[in-house]
Structures are given as structure tokens and as C-alpha cells.
Length: 166
Figure 1 (cartoon, rainbow, N blue to C red):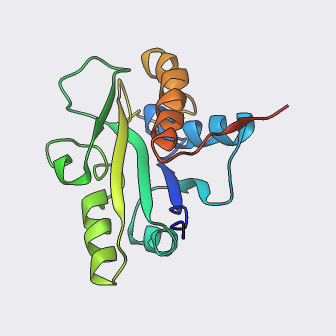
Figure 2: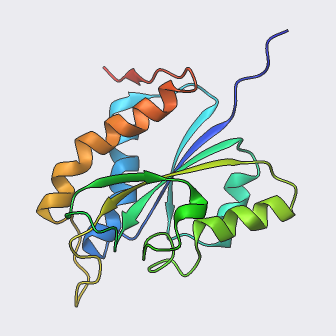
């Protein structure tokens, strides 16, 4: 008997009003506009992260968090991948959202959810503009196609092939 396919969520978090902080929602839009995914995959524009993500995590086995990161030591626009427990040094995944992804996963574990968590981030140039500005800075914008490819590659590791929309 074949094991059921894992339920996979791509949680794209961020605030589109704060320049590069809108990276996650931008990736969600690119993915949902260009591809169709099997029923066991959810692409979620989850807004700003918090414990409200627990309702999404409840139904998932594997999660890829996509977000803006800072303090990676890399040039703006550089994509970084890491595990949730490696988040501590980065302003990402909690600076603009007040809750770290690792904390959300720990809360999920306390509720009995078993989730395999992964993170994809982009080193930002600016996610703290003096006023609300929609759009990504140029180096982060340039990284969008590669980030989409990284998400698709992550899904392929689980045997999932996204279908381009006609």
C-alpha cells in the first residue's frame, strides 16, 4: 500500500506595503498566476506571520516558509535557505512579524501537529521605508524568478510537478 502524499504548504508571508517585506506575497502571486498544483499542495499568501498560522499548519505535513530576511551578511537579492531552528541570527521571520517561525512551529508541536519546516528567504535592501511603498527594490525584484524556481525545486523533492497554466 502506498503512503498518502504529504500535504505541503508554501507559506508566503510579508507586508506588501513595506517594499521588500512584500517578497513573500509576491512569490505567492507569481506561483498562483503561473502554475497549477495538485490538491495536496497549497500556496498561501499568509500576510504577516503570527500564531494565526496555526490554523494553516494544522492541515499540513511539510511547510516551506517564504519571506524577506535581513542580516544574512549576503548582498541584497541573495536567496538563502535554512531550517527554522537556524533563524535566530536573522531579523527575518520575526522582525516585521513579531513572531518567529520556529516559535510558531513549537506551538504547533505543543498542539500535536507534526510538521517538517523549511525556509526560503531573500536578503532585503529595504523593508522599513519611512512611508508605505508597494513594490520590491531592484535587487529583490531580480531575485523573484529564481525564488519561484527554488519553490518549484523544493516541491519536486516531494515528487510534485507544478503544471504551467495555459
